[in-house]
Image 1: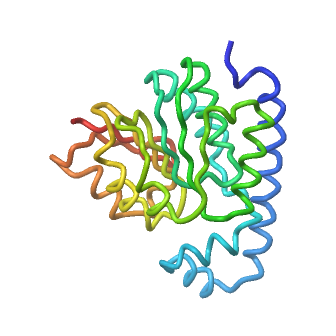
Image 2: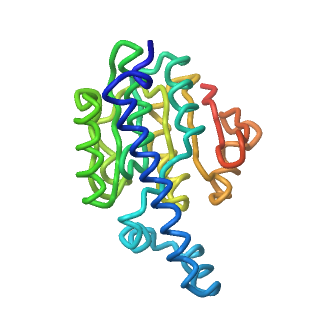
Length: 220
C-alpha cells in the first residue's frame, strides 16, 4: 500500500493536478498576449525574483510522470533526508513526503521564494497529514538552504529558477552522501548546471530522463 494511493493524499493530488493543468492553460493564454521579443527578454533575464513574483498564481508544477518518478526514486533509494529547491504549491513535495512516510520517516526541507505559495504549500501538507515530515523555508534559497541541513542528504530536487541550479547544487554538495540522487527539472534551461554534472571526472554520473529531467548520482 502506497501513501500516494490512499486518502487523503489521493484526492488532494487529483485536485492539485487538475488545478495545475488549468494554471498552465491560463499561463499559455497570458503569454499569447505578450510579444515574442518580451518573452525572449524574460527568458534571458537573471532577475528570477521578478519572474517568480509575476508568476505567483501559476503552479509551475512538475508533470504527473515526473512526480511519480520522484516518489519511486525516493522509495527505492530508501531516502530519509530530502531537499527541494522550488516548492510552489507542493505537488512534488507531497510525492517526496509520501515516500518518506512509506520509508518509515525522515525530513524534507523545501524552499520557496513567493510567500503566498509557501502558505498554500503548507496548507496542502496539513491536508495530506504530512506536515510532520516537511519544513518549507521562505525566501531566497541561497540563504534559506545555507543553514541547518542534514549532514547526509539522500535526494535533491531542483525545480526553481534555472539560473540558480548550479549555485544551489554547490551549496548542498558537501552534504550529499555517496550515491545521493539529484533530479533537475527543465535542466536544459541551465547549460552551466548540465556542464557540471555531465563533466568527466566531475563527481557525478548523469543522464537525461524523458524530455525535461536530468537525473544525476553523486559518486563520492
